[in-house]
Amino acid sequence: MIGQISDWDVSVLVWIAEHLRTAFLTPIMKFITYTGNAGIIWIILSIVLICIPKYRKAGLASAIALIIDLLCVNICVKPLAHRIRPYVYSHEVSLIIKKAADYSFPSGHTAAAFASSMAILRSEHKKLGACALIYATLMGFSRLYVGIHYPTDVIAGIILGDLFGLAGAAIAALIYRKLKEKKKISGTLKDQ
Image (cartoon, rainbow, N blue to C red; front, side, top):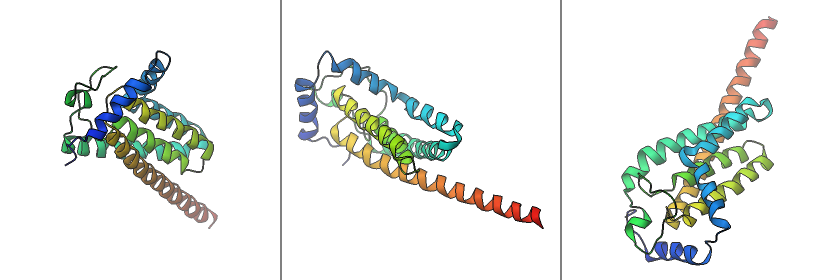
């Protein structure tokens, strides 16, 4: 079922290639796409945030969300969905980056981007989360622009990423709550 490709999926990619690709926009979209390879920009962002006390909880939430994303998307869903890439399915779709070695559904770049940005957004850092969310949206669009994913791959990546981000934020909040309780208990015991 997921392996099926609709005419709509292909027609959107063809329309983007014919109407939106420009000499100015192409290097920007390629750059955005490449920053998502192996989730590198989101991993770096998580590490930087963990190193800054004010943003540590958001960084932890993002890191947890990315781990959940990796396990679910790359290890479970992609191999099960077994959906071929658009440029393999249709000669109408032109790819402007290097071919991918894995399956198409869902978009791993998009899922990781939304997992990290949603985790940050839900961790009490609205401005930082909103900026990350804007970049995540550009990341998702860049996957369509370069011809490596179908629109339904990106939509699924957004939905899954949001869920993983919410889970990452909830787990990080739980960890912080447990650490606070432990600190209170150890402080109380020292007072006795």
